[in-house]
Length: 435
Image (cartoon, rainbow, N blue to C red; front, top):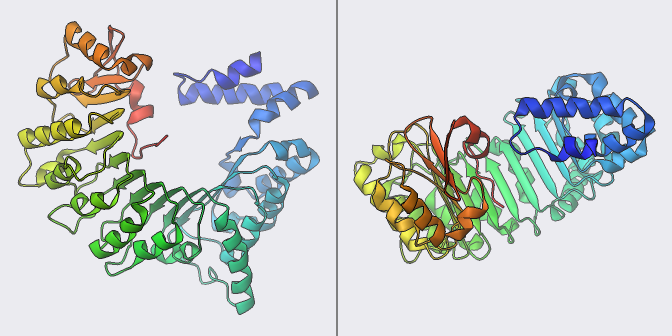
């Protein structure tokens, strides 16, 4: 009972409180053999340790801890290796992965550069993970001289190992320089459903998306970060292929090279799209918002825009035109919307009651967050909750932000003001988390 309470009672708990609970769980595991067995089930499921990044001894101690008690290794479902290259103990991690036969989620993250000969070693590491379906590969910003395998035999061996690994992946997340990750993306990912990529040195004349889409024919969820220099031809080629399968798209920041907006070119290809997230970085224009509201655009179930004042860098944009564009988006998708979120960073711009009057048109609305000039009356709130009954089912389903650093949570006519920071962990983040 005590262990279940420590593990499962997480709602509303701060990071500090969760640290105390983790420490308590560790202490319980040290008291006796019975509690050790009961607690280790939770302690080892998702291993994360900062000491593993710089402490050579800790990397070997992890291996020894798993080898002396095999049940620990069998418990592990997720493992993160975050390391500085000089401290990376390849043999320790290889043997550790071989013990974790139930591992399904693997993260390999490097600080600034990769270890020498790592691509060759990567083949052996992923070959030790036959059940991994989610893979994060990050921190690839600088290529060491020994990064790529040197001999034909090494290249062939890595290619064979990674090609097999790529076929088993359902989710892939990559962060780094285009030169570091390009070869990883040359393999076929026939089962890949979700892909997140963060690249800040995309060359202007490149066929990256055209090639990538040919290797990921089943992609349903795509998050793009820092592809500011992508060319339209390449994007169109890729999104034409993904248009048959892609359901969720996040872009932050937008492609900055097209003054007539980007979404007008891409959305017509995405006939299956249901979730759209636009990030806060500069570049999205009023024409992008207009494109979302067009009849030819896919009907969205979820729309989120994390907006800042850079929208007004567009000479056509002002409070009135942006307000109307958002209203047009809401009306155009009201029959399908279940989540509609407008996050503003600096409290510079609020909607008037003209938007509020349209909210009840979305009968299936479950989550709503919009900045308003004034707090709605109780009658207006009740009218909205009656028209959109699913908003009653979530404590944070309806949040109307008023002014800066204040918020009101409206649920079942229970009005209260809370500090905005209470919600930051759930909605003031750079990435959207799709269901």
